[in-house]
Amino acid sequence: MDRPGSDEPIRTPGDKRSYLDGLLDRIAYLEHEVEAELNRARAQWRYHIGADRVRFEHDVRLAHQRLKQGLVRFFRGSNVATIATAPVIYSLVVPMVLLDGWVTLYQAICFRAYGIAPVRRSAYIVIDRQHLSYLNGVEKLNCMFCGYGTGVFAYVREVAGRTEQYWCPIRHAHRVRATHRLYRHFVDYGDAEGYRQRLIPLRNELRKKPIVEKP
Image (cartoon, rainbow, N blue to C red; front, top):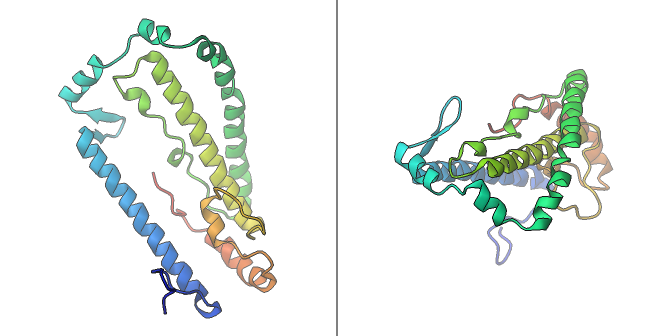
Protein backbone atom coordinates (compact mmCIF):
# COMPACT_ATOMS: atom_id res chain seq x y z
CA MET A 1 0.00 0.00 0.00
CA ASP A 2 1.41 3.38 -1.00
CA ARG A 3 1.16 6.64 0.82
CA PRO A 4 -1.11 9.09 -1.08
CA GLY A 5 0.94 11.37 -3.26
CA SER A 6 4.16 9.41 -2.74
CA ASP A 7 5.91 6.54 -4.45
CA GLU A 8 7.44 5.35 -1.17
CA PRO A 9 5.81 2.53 0.80
CA ILE A 10 4.38 3.16 4.26
CA ARG A 11 6.70 1.90 6.95
CA THR A 12 5.31 -0.40 9.60
CA PRO A 13 7.18 -2.14 12.45
CA GLY A 14 6.98 -5.45 10.60
CA ASP A 15 8.61 -4.28 7.39
CA LYS A 16 11.15 -1.82 8.76
CA ARG A 17 14.17 -3.81 7.65
CA SER A 18 12.82 -4.47 4.17
CA TYR A 19 12.10 -0.77 3.76
CA LEU A 20 15.68 0.01 4.82
CA ASP A 21 16.97 -2.55 2.35
CA GLY A 22 15.03 -0.74 -0.36
CA LEU A 23 16.60 2.57 0.62
CA LEU A 24 20.07 1.02 0.51
CA ASP A 25 19.32 -0.38 -2.95
CA ARG A 26 18.35 3.11 -4.10
CA ILE A 27 21.58 4.52 -2.65
CA ALA A 28 23.60 1.87 -4.50
CA TYR A 29 21.75 2.76 -7.71
CA LEU A 30 22.52 6.46 -7.23
CA GLU A 31 26.20 5.66 -6.63
CA HIS A 32 26.18 3.76 -9.92
CA GLU A 33 24.61 6.79 -11.62
CA VAL A 34 27.29 9.07 -10.17
CA GLU A 35 30.02 6.82 -11.59
CA ALA A 36 28.28 6.77 -14.97
CA GLU A 37 28.08 10.57 -14.96
CA LEU A 38 31.81 10.79 -14.16
CA ASN A 39 32.54 8.55 -17.13
CA ARG A 40 30.42 10.81 -19.36
CA ALA A 41 32.37 13.84 -18.11
CA ARG A 42 35.67 12.10 -18.88
CA ALA A 43 34.50 11.43 -22.41
CA GLN A 44 33.24 15.00 -22.86
CA TRP A 45 36.45 16.65 -21.66
CA ARG A 46 38.62 13.99 -23.35
CA TYR A 47 40.79 12.67 -20.56
CA HIS A 48 41.46 9.31 -18.96
CA ILE A 49 42.93 8.26 -15.66
CA GLY A 50 46.23 6.42 -16.04
CA ALA A 51 48.30 4.56 -13.51
CA ASP A 52 50.22 7.67 -12.44
CA ARG A 53 48.12 10.71 -13.42
CA VAL A 54 45.18 12.09 -15.38
CA ARG A 55 46.00 12.46 -19.07
CA PHE A 56 44.28 14.71 -21.61
CA GLU A 57 44.43 14.30 -25.34
CA HIS A 58 47.26 16.29 -26.98
CA ASP A 59 45.14 19.00 -28.64
CA VAL A 60 43.18 19.50 -25.43
CA ARG A 61 46.41 20.07 -23.49
CA LEU A 62 47.51 22.69 -26.00
CA ALA A 63 44.16 24.49 -25.69
CA HIS A 64 44.50 24.44 -21.90
CA GLN A 65 47.98 25.92 -22.02
CA ARG A 66 46.72 28.82 -24.11
CA LEU A 67 44.18 29.61 -21.39
CA LYS A 68 46.68 29.69 -18.53
CA GLN A 69 46.83 33.03 -16.74
CA GLY A 70 50.32 34.37 -16.06
CA LEU A 71 51.37 35.13 -12.49
CA VAL A 72 51.71 38.88 -13.07
CA ARG A 73 48.19 39.12 -14.45
CA PHE A 74 46.95 36.82 -11.71
CA PHE A 75 48.33 38.96 -8.87
CA ARG A 76 47.13 42.16 -10.54
CA GLY A 77 43.62 40.74 -10.47
CA SER A 78 43.85 39.82 -6.78
CA ASN A 79 42.76 42.29 -4.11
CA VAL A 80 44.92 43.23 -1.13
CA ALA A 81 42.73 41.34 1.36
CA THR A 82 43.17 38.08 -0.56
CA ILE A 83 46.96 38.39 -0.57
CA ALA A 84 47.13 39.54 3.07
CA THR A 85 45.05 36.64 4.38
CA ALA A 86 46.85 33.96 2.36
CA PRO A 87 49.38 33.19 5.15
CA VAL A 88 46.51 32.67 7.61
CA ILE A 89 44.80 30.27 5.25
CA TYR A 90 47.93 28.27 4.54
CA SER A 91 48.82 28.11 8.24
CA LEU A 92 45.96 25.61 8.56
CA VAL A 93 48.14 23.02 6.89
CA VAL A 94 49.92 22.50 10.22
CA PRO A 95 46.87 21.37 12.26
CA MET A 96 45.56 19.43 9.24
CA VAL A 97 48.79 17.44 8.94
CA LEU A 98 48.76 16.78 12.69
CA LEU A 99 45.12 15.67 12.53
CA ASP A 100 45.82 13.47 9.52
CA GLY A 101 48.76 11.77 11.21
CA TRP A 102 47.08 11.41 14.59
CA VAL A 103 43.90 9.87 13.19
CA THR A 104 45.94 7.52 11.00
CA LEU A 105 47.83 6.36 14.10
CA TYR A 106 44.56 6.09 16.05
CA GLN A 107 42.90 3.76 13.57
CA ALA A 108 46.09 1.75 13.10
CA ILE A 109 46.08 0.98 16.83
CA CYS A 110 42.43 1.04 17.90
CA PHE A 111 40.68 -0.30 14.79
CA ARG A 112 43.04 -3.25 14.78
CA ALA A 113 42.25 -3.89 18.45
CA TYR A 114 38.48 -3.67 17.86
CA GLY A 115 38.52 -5.63 14.62
CA ILE A 116 37.17 -2.67 12.61
CA ALA A 117 38.11 -2.55 8.94
CA PRO A 118 40.53 0.38 8.48
CA VAL A 119 39.57 3.40 6.42
CA ARG A 120 41.52 3.58 3.16
CA ARG A 121 43.04 7.06 3.34
CA SER A 122 43.68 7.31 -0.42
CA ALA A 123 39.97 6.97 -1.13
CA TYR A 124 39.34 10.32 0.60
CA ILE A 125 42.47 12.40 0.11
CA VAL A 126 42.73 12.99 -3.63
CA ILE A 127 45.20 15.55 -5.01
CA ASP A 128 45.15 15.63 -8.82
CA ARG A 129 44.06 19.09 -9.98
CA GLN A 130 47.67 20.32 -10.14
CA HIS A 131 47.96 18.38 -13.42
CA LEU A 132 45.61 20.83 -15.19
CA SER A 133 47.76 22.84 -17.55
CA TYR A 134 45.39 25.85 -17.62
CA LEU A 135 46.26 26.58 -13.97
CA ASN A 136 49.28 28.66 -13.04
CA GLY A 137 51.60 27.80 -10.15
CA VAL A 138 49.60 29.63 -7.47
CA GLU A 139 46.31 28.16 -8.64
CA LYS A 140 47.82 24.68 -8.58
CA LEU A 141 49.07 25.27 -5.05
CA ASN A 142 45.61 26.47 -4.00
CA CYS A 143 44.00 23.37 -5.50
CA MET A 144 46.47 21.06 -3.78
CA PHE A 145 45.81 22.77 -0.45
CA CYS A 146 42.02 22.53 -0.86
CA GLY A 147 42.15 18.93 -2.06
CA TYR A 148 44.25 17.93 0.92
CA GLY A 149 42.15 19.84 3.44
CA THR A 150 38.75 18.62 2.33
CA GLY A 151 40.18 15.13 1.90
CA VAL A 152 41.56 15.04 5.44
CA PHE A 153 38.22 16.12 6.89
CA ALA A 154 36.35 13.50 4.84
CA TYR A 155 38.86 10.85 5.95
CA VAL A 156 38.55 11.85 9.60
CA ARG A 157 34.75 11.91 9.29
CA GLU A 158 34.74 8.30 8.07
CA VAL A 159 37.05 7.19 10.88
CA ALA A 160 34.83 8.99 13.40
CA GLY A 161 31.69 7.48 11.86
CA ARG A 162 33.02 3.93 12.20
CA THR A 163 34.07 4.69 15.77
CA GLU A 164 30.59 5.99 16.56
CA GLN A 165 28.94 2.93 15.03
CA TYR A 166 31.10 0.70 17.21
CA TRP A 167 30.55 2.52 20.50
CA CYS A 168 27.28 4.44 20.22
CA PRO A 169 25.12 3.65 17.16
CA ILE A 170 22.11 5.67 18.38
CA ARG A 171 20.46 8.49 16.46
CA HIS A 172 20.09 11.84 18.17
CA ALA A 173 16.74 13.12 19.40
CA HIS A 174 17.37 16.44 17.64
CA ARG A 175 17.85 16.82 13.93
CA VAL A 176 21.50 16.65 12.86
CA ARG A 177 22.50 18.24 9.59
CA ALA A 178 24.92 16.57 7.18
CA THR A 179 25.29 13.32 9.10
CA HIS A 180 27.97 10.83 8.08
CA ARG A 181 26.96 7.95 5.80
CA LEU A 182 26.79 5.31 8.56
CA TYR A 183 24.33 7.32 10.66
CA ARG A 184 21.34 6.03 8.70
CA HIS A 185 21.96 2.52 10.07
CA PHE A 186 21.83 3.64 13.70
CA VAL A 187 19.08 2.74 16.16
CA ASP A 188 16.29 5.23 16.86
CA TYR A 189 16.63 7.42 19.94
CA GLY A 190 14.73 5.75 22.78
CA ASP A 191 14.60 2.29 21.18
CA ALA A 192 16.21 0.45 24.11
CA GLU A 193 15.31 -3.03 22.90
CA GLY A 194 16.51 -2.27 19.38
CA TYR A 195 19.82 -0.99 20.75
CA ARG A 196 20.45 -4.19 22.68
CA GLN A 197 19.46 -6.33 19.69
CA ARG A 198 21.44 -4.45 17.04
CA LEU A 199 24.62 -3.31 18.84
CA ILE A 200 26.59 -6.50 18.10
CA PRO A 201 25.33 -6.85 14.49
CA LEU A 202 26.27 -3.21 13.83
CA ARG A 203 29.73 -3.85 15.24
CA ASN A 204 30.06 -6.94 13.09
CA GLU A 205 29.20 -4.85 10.01
CA LEU A 206 32.38 -2.86 10.62
CA ARG A 207 34.50 -5.99 10.25
CA LYS A 208 33.60 -6.34 6.56
CA LYS A 209 36.28 -5.32 4.04
CA PRO A 210 35.82 -3.06 2.22
CA ILE A 211 32.93 -1.10 3.73
CA VAL A 212 31.33 0.52 0.65
CA GLU A 213 34.47 2.49 -0.09
CA LYS A 214 35.14 3.94 -3.53
CA PRO A 215 38.63 4.67 -4.91
